[in-house]
Image (cartoon, rainbow, N blue to C red; front, side, top):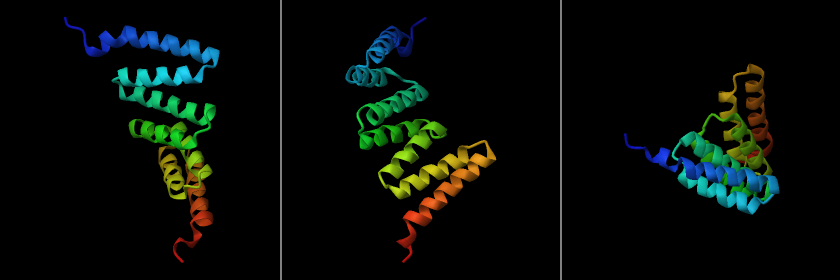
Length: 141
């Protein structure tokens, strides 16, 4: 029986994951970024691609302080994992930090509809409403 492309790529992706673990332990963020990008190119599974994009976004946000790049990667990850509450939350927070109010409201509303907990759901709706009221108040003027 012929191996699938994913099965043939598994040893290479396993090797990359081992390299990633090593450079993370060493705190070599440049190497991790390069390896994560290579892994992204080799990975066919959409959920795994979403996880990798999330991690790359985390690197840009937490290690490089580049919120613009972080938002780009988080948005791409959300395309693959639209109901990921953690991604929605961090993306909303970044949009707020960057004063991108419309996008922040959208992320808060998306969080609200994905929340299972009714209290958390209401909290997200309130957050979206507050941003709209406080930051977009003169939109109707």
